[in-house]
Image (cartoon, rainbow, N blue to C red; front, side, top):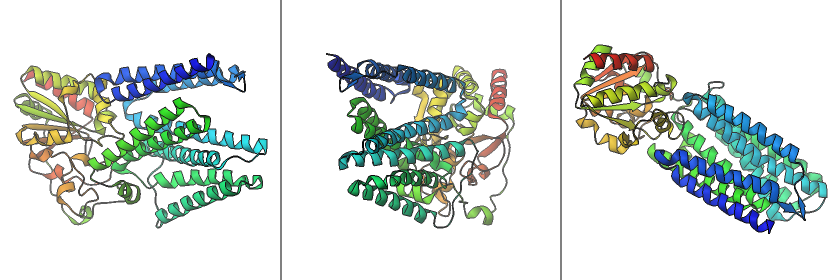
Length: 467
């Protein structure tokens, strides 16, 4: 009877994972979807702790189990509550890396069980163990490098022939794994740990050269790796919850990666090999005089926005850095009350992770109905009076359409230059995250509004009220 109850617990958990993932597709239901999936995981954990049996014996080391649960719960809760929106991508990378590490540790534990019993395992079991080890370790090491790069601890780094070195390391990993699986000699058990070390090295070299606008794609890809590694753990333990959860994360991460590559008009192989944004400079930066830029005052900006018929706001990472989403929403509401049509244009890879801007604006209770995707917004810019760009850079760079020498050439961007007036808020004229000069800043219809986004928006709110 207990086994049947456990199976029911796993079934409920699997269903909640699927329902929760479906609800994550819309901001209005995303919070509820998270809670539903979390409730399913809670049921699966309790069911495993109190109902799981192996050879008629239940789990007994409750002290270690609940000690780990309490420690992880406290650490995760504090991290989630204290994290700033600008640091959300780093936290996602960090948590994803922990998932990969857990999947790899499962393989380590099960391999040691086989060696301890000193008995041959079937080839399929060893294949699953090695696959979980390799993918989980690569996800862990790569996610840690992504975390360190996003918070500025390390910089993009590459050397000549690095991709060849990466392919060589990967080939050695596969050959060593295949050799052990085929021969199953316990005297060669050290090969397992050599594969572990090489997988860490590969994960580091895999992410180290990638930077710029490709980081959201890499985060999504590593997330899918963690899901696949967890799925292998589900196969290993014949656990339907781990299997379902791993498949959902792996498939969702893969689909999101493909969609983001499509949004950037770049194949995944080009993202991984091309290393856009790392050690790249647009060749015209050194040879082409971009001309002069012009500035606009707070008062003039407030006047043109107040008497505009249509305004589109383009949020970027600078808005997140300034924690200005709430005052931005306040400006939007004031303009709307005065008869101005205000919408937001969201580029798929704006920010540092998938959906970064959507989450940022949702935190400020911005109506999801006025968030426009890139294709929808591009149809509206020609009928727009004012475009206010808040910290976005590469996603509004016309060089993607006009300059074949630019590293971002061919990447779909927001056609903000079609509007009657473009106001760009930045702290300075420094290039964006990808390190590429933006020719939009020097166009006749563009005016620069320098300063911290939050301070600028607060002043705009005050000025608009007085106009």
